[in-house]
Image (cartoon, rainbow, N blue to C red; front, side, top):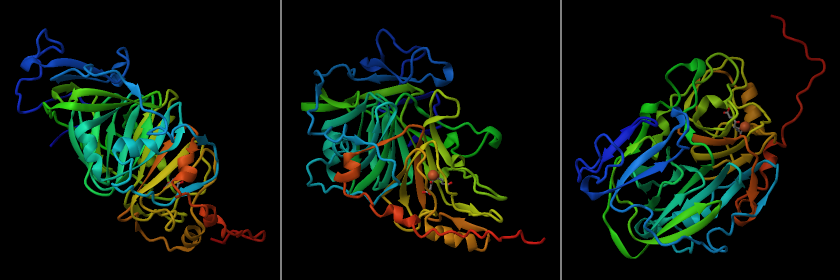
Length: 440
Ligand SMILES: O=C(O)/C=C/C(=O)CC(=O)CC(=O)O
Ligand SMILES: [Fe+2]
């Protein structure tokens, strides 16, 4: 089970150790059950209260007890990290291949982090993440910790079991989870598994402000689920590896016990999950296509008011009812970068070619919009109320930063759809210089 809310002051004890959370203070001289107290700070100590994030962990051994970190050699996990190529073209990728469990690099760390699709070293990275069965190995003997930023994980195929210092979360397609900077975690999969990861630096995800919408709507705080404390007191004499991403490089260290040894914790800095089906969709009920910001689930704000490092936006099933309107997304150029993925179904602006497990990238100011089929169909469609995106879940990582696509994304993955631009080629001029407004 889980605790509900968004960024609350939570507290949780593993039921095997009642009273393990110290009463009335964070750092007693001796903690209950002989535990160590450890604070994890997700914000500067002096951040204003609304942004101040920290948790207190009460654990069997503190995380400092480990052998020194050493760089994971290049040519292994980080080989795809620094080759980046700017390219303003519209890009689309066919569904990414799920590596076979016999392939060499197939745990969460190896597969997920070795293949960044695009990178800016300032504020965010998108990883296209694919993985498979033997992540088991990872959860028993390896965990991961990101010192650089936060991960937002979007499983697309197969459920994942995320074990963290705060407890366990089962996350299935149509759910997302967020694991913040510094949290140790591992991932188990149960078959062919694929998903997307967005990494942001320097900001945590928060719920967007609602302005005139009012106090309720979009993603409601009560639908976010936080894990409850769970510990294992497991010695690993053969060595447990902690992998640490620090300044864009991977480091590994050994310790002789499981890091998932937190018996109790309290605080407002913890991982969480959210089911996208709980999103309260708001849409136009009169005319015109509303801007996609109405579909923002979570936002990582930059220091400029209203400008996000990255927004996580979804396009869920809903009603389309706008009168005298071209209902699909309009043609546009955007000062933000738009990376899209598809969890299931058919996206309205691209019925063909944009497939579950694939992706598209429309970079800053790169023109894009509905393909020719979609345009022709929708200028003549009879405008009845109709369901849009039934059985579909598309999403967008939208960022104010420009992206450079890695060599892995351009070549190695072999999924770049070189024909993407052709979906707009049939668009033809309908211009008629003799057009007259119709008499009312
Ligand atoms: O309002 C929306 O529904 C989407 C808005 C978008 O910007 C996403 C796209 O750019 C879609 C696309 O044409 O690929
Ligand atoms: Fe767009």
